[in-house]
Length: 394
Ligand SMILES: Cc1cc2nc3c(=O)[nH]c(=O)nc-3n(C[C@H](O)[C@H](O)[C@H](O)COP(=O)(O)OP(=O)(O)OC[C@H]3O[C@@H](n4cnc5c(N)ncnc54)[C@H](O)[C@@H]3O)c2cc1C
Image 1 (cartoon, rainbow, N blue to C red):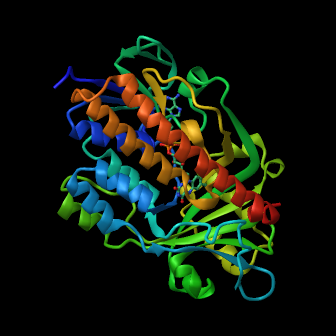
Image 2: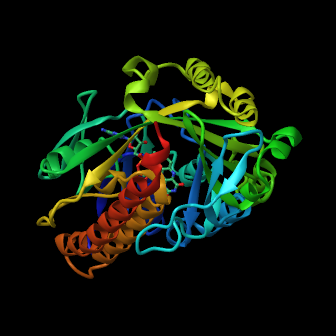
């Protein structure tokens, strides 16, 4: 075996943690630096749709017992995007306009609780993940610097620091993010019998965009395959999962000018009140969903997309996930692609540690496929936003 590699990862999001899991299992020295003060310092989102791309990556990266826990707790099949018309007395399903050259908007997959997934990805990494460490810049030899004035040296730096990536700003200053002018207030509401009765039956295996109302909304169920806490006790003793109840995820989507910068910074419970204000004239079934939410889980997001850049010369600093190819959520591809990047990069780095090729060769081979996969997903997600979402978001 060659000398043990030290890999520094900026960002403990889905991609960074998935990579850390794989490297750790293979005996690579890995350190993750996260800007947030702790794992629960902000609401992490509600539901994510994972298809075979994300699940294959999780299978490759997680230790067996954690992948088993993922499989046992993931939600119901999520097979299609549906459109719900909220005009009139009853919510009713209407056809989704076809996308040019493509048959379905999302690949068949599963609904997954984002916070459960994140907790599984964090399991066993207590000594690897360091919170309150916002990367500011790096030196080329490779040394990462943080906002608290400290620094750490390694052989490789991976920017897994999301859409506003500090690593990308320095590594590829020419790479730009376009603001799509869409703002998203999201939340979670426990599933009750009356909520279920009032939502269209077809929603059970779908994810829905609601049109015919102002503002537009997105909704979907998250029903755990098995009770999360008891399943964790059985498969990963000591790991305590936070989400315990099935929920409806909802999101209100509006044009940027309808939410101020101050709205974006509101604490979760005030943001929930803002969501209620925005839905005063919504269909009663949808207003009920927003009204019965757990207010502390409300969060705000701006939707942006990466502008693809031509391939670059590889060195010891690379990027994965949203840090290099952020995309709108229209085709549920961002997390799937970030997880695929993690599995791919991890495999190349491990090969390099085992003496199969130099580090720049390993990173170059990863970047070659990552650029193709990531920017293709950006293009198809942006096409989907343009084809129908822009028509319903006012
Ligand atoms: C509303 C919405 C719904 C979505 N739904 C889906 C879906 O259903 N399916 C799907 O595949 N994708 C979905 N996506 C996309 C998906 O969420 C992202 O693509 C995915 O989270 C990207 O993972 P990541 O690890 O690259 O970045 P992130 O998950 O954003 O993680 C980045 C991490 O880096 C940290 N960080 C930021 N800056 C620094 C810094 N300077 N130093 C240290 N740490 C830093 C952040 O705090 C964060 O923890 C959705 C996106 C949105 C906005």
